[in-house]
Image (cartoon, rainbow, N blue to C red; front, side, top):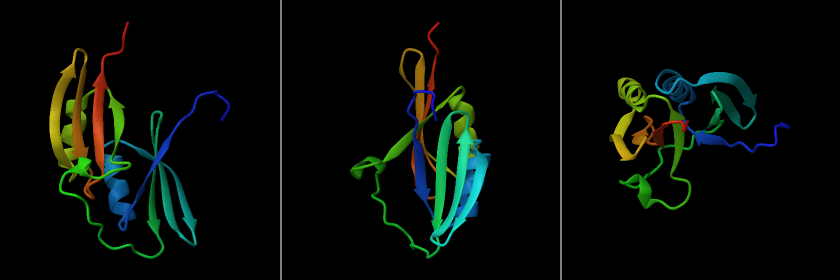
Length: 134
């Protein structure tokens, strides 16, 4: 990568790879870019515009994870933000595909709104819509 710009690729660990990939494909419109198999497990690399996401299923199941009742009560990496053109449409697709809406679309400053959603496994995303300055 020689475009002199850093990028980030977030990762989610799951025990149900295909179901979680289907959610990100159908609800948040990610495309599967690569399917990788290793002795340690399976990885699906997903892309949407400049957003990158990896979903990993270990070869041996981890079992259910205990999450705090409120997403921000856990220190460390607690959510990721996805910049979109139409937050309301994103939230409706999330709801229709088994995700949860934590906070509906809310205007938080002029030209910007957000929503908080969770995928079916409880991973939290900020859906962020901002007007592009002219």
